[in-house]
Length: 82
Figure 1 (tube, one colour):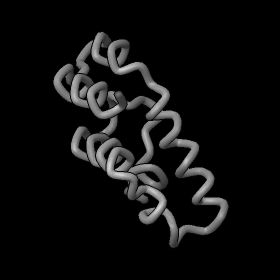
Figure 2 (cartoon, helix red, strand yellow):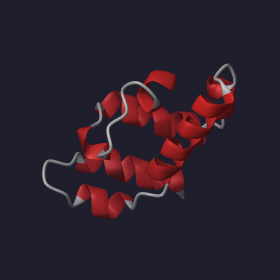
Figure 3 (cartoon, rainbow, N blue to C red):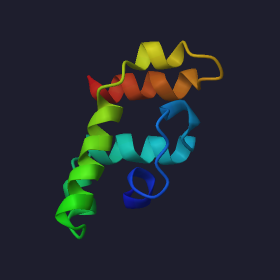
Figure 4 (cartoon, rainbow, N blue to C red):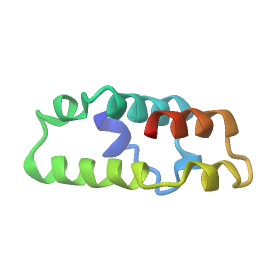
C-alpha cells in the first residue's frame, strides 16, 4: 500500500494497477491505512494520506464513465464508500 501511494503513484486512478487500486480502497474500508502508513516519516505519511484522500474524493460513477475504465471495479468502490 505504501508503494502504491508513494513510489508507484499515478495521477490518474484509471491508469493505476487495478489490484493495487482495489487494495487501497479495501484498506481504507477496513480502517487499516493508519497502520500501513505508521512506519513512514511525517512527510511521507502526509503525502500518502493526501493521495488516498484524492482517491476517496473521486466520484465512482464519473470514473466508470471514462474511456477504458473498469466499470465493475468502480461499482465495487461505490459500494465500499457508502
